Image 1 (cartoon, rainbow, N blue to C red):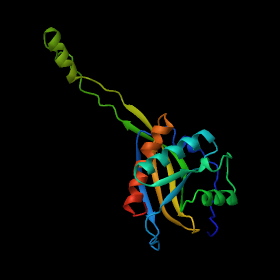
Image 2: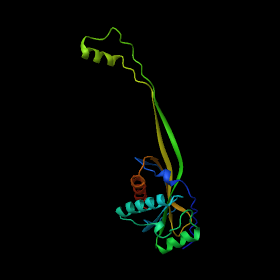
Image 3: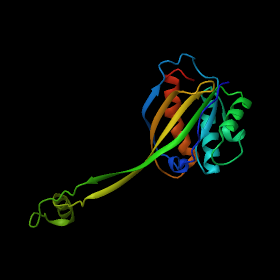
Image 4: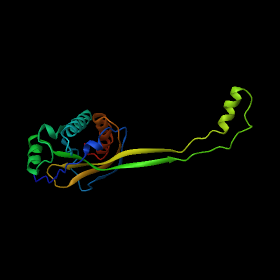
Length: 205
């Protein structure tokens, strides 16, 4: 096996996967020179300085790969150390697991979108009200005022990259946009679906 040159920089994967209601694959790329066919066994690596987040992410993603007929192993089952993993330690773990590929996920950035719905004042209806409570009720709708609303949407941009273990270059990479909530396991399940679907479409799994 040639050197697998992957530097794992500790990032806030916890934020990236702190619950996602929805995940969308915004773009993806496949190496046009790669003709090796589907990989057989993937080592899943979550890049995070938080050990619990890394474990939950790797376990859940691996489970989803297995549910799609792909053999997968979470890196933490081979590498119990927390934080950034040394290159030789990672290569050793890949070899010991008999993995032919490595899938890494890292957070790129957190963004907030603001959506403003402007107020829609209606013309006053003084003198236009009909008699009776229903007449008042129906007339009130004609002069109903809805104030402007401001909504904040927080989401995470993450990058997932697939390496074949005997190559130093990636064979596939995808960028996702994930809305935030509270459950890491549920988040990862939602996150894994579009990534796995894209890998299938690319003929890599």
